[in-house]
Image (cartoon, rainbow, N blue to C red; front, side, top):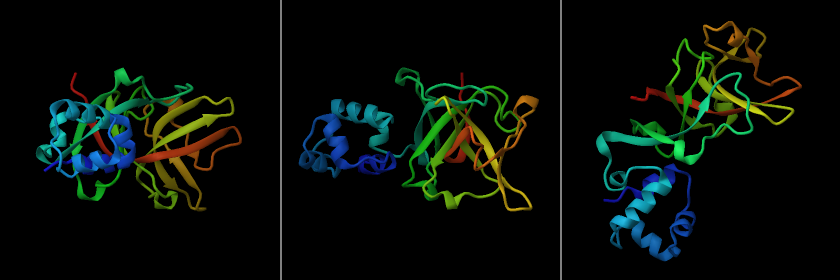
Length: 208
């Protein structure tokens, strides 16, 4: 049975969006997704590239895993206009296909530098689920945090959510490097805009 529908939903895409991107009308795409039209090898390759999975993943769940594309890096102190890499630099990692994460879009980024090295040595891939509701944030959990300065430059890193006795929330670093050990107030300062991109759900190391 095709897994195309499940993967499409995990990517947060509609049938109409996928159909348009692969050059099918919606009716024919619907027939393809529901197994009423044969999935050719060339079409399988086209869909796999679009959805960032291996072609075989469209046909079967390989050992209860799902594939996530690593598209960016996270590194405190590294400021740029965008944190996402060019598509030719993306690579994939596999993580367990957990029941509680089905239906959630997962993203992944590679850690660089020493800003989170107590937990994630450089080169670790952190996989995170997009935050649907800010009120769902939990103290003690780690989050991908993007800071944007007034000049528009951004940095992304990993921080742990903490709460002090006064009820104020802080983003805490876990670094051996004194340059990256200052807590960040969740509400940010006058010069910084802070965006929580998602909660870390897995961490893996890429084989090199």
